[in-house]
Length: 181
View 1: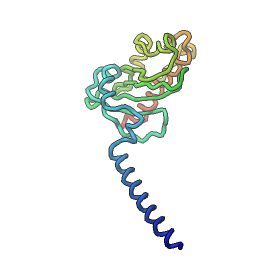
View 2: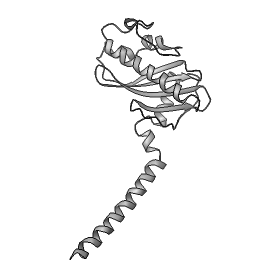
View 3: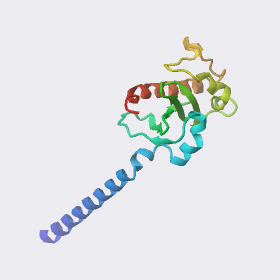
View 4: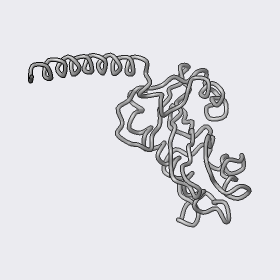
């Protein structure tokens, strides 16, 4: 009786292991693991000129980083710099930001790709006047309320802080990977 149960069970375990191996290989070979939480090539092509104006084509940069707030690092094929996709917590929840940095680590542009910030107030972090305050910055930035040089959006302190944290995370990541870009 036990032979009737053990043999089919072992066969099923072997089949499941083989299928799992094939799926894992396909998943990794297709790059689904890296790009699954990041940006598609189409999204990168659409946003490159806003975040890296001198860029030509962004490609996923495979770099082992154990940081859940970094969704992707993308290197410019033409050598203009890179873009770093970061998630942070804003007032309304997750905020996903793409920050462009030139080869020296200065901000060349940024775009809020996704947020649930308060319309008309928190969403002002997505507008050019606020984003432009970060252009050219090369090191950790602070809002004026924290003794820094960037004026946050009045009434949208949490949103302004979240965006600033995203930019600072991009600097941190850039400093870790710049030698490999």
